[in-house]
Image (cartoon, rainbow, N blue to C red; front, top):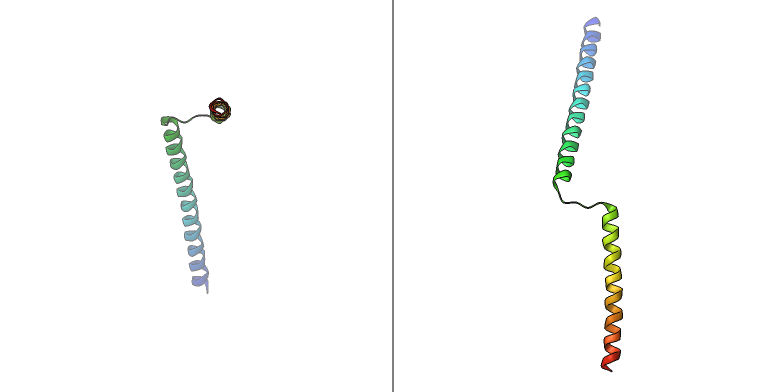
Length: 78
């Protein structure tokens, strides 16, 4: 009976150690992926959200002006 108890204790220790190692591995992988993504983002030519919104507004205004000019041109042709 005592051998069974000892066996279960050993299995529990082994499982606990494996779980700890798995958690450490997970943290290490997360850290490596985060580092890699940060390096890729730093190297890329990305714009900020604010810059994107400004350019988007400029494009909308240019489209509106283009439509107005197109309508004016059609009026002049008629």
